[in-house]
Length: 135
Image: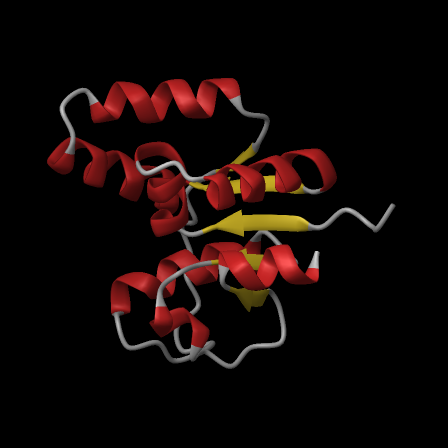
């Protein structure tokens, strides 16, 4: 068995898993929960709650229930944020990736092309498909 990795999923990946389930997204979650460690920074948890509240009736309840049922480690809010560790087009995304760095995540899984253009050594930034192919 391959070594376990610390994995952070971006908000858009969680949204797809929770509200637009598909075989690929279900398999991604299964692989992560079975073979790796799932870390959820507060900034991502709060983003998914806000999006669920805006887009779905009873969405917040569904998100809370989802996170109650899956094993994961929550990462508390980061108080001191180091600026300019990397550049990303959307300033709101900076905190998301920064939280993954602080958590010492090995992999950050996202469908957002802005993240895929960031050049950092760790965490490795992959799409869901790339993650499944590689791990």
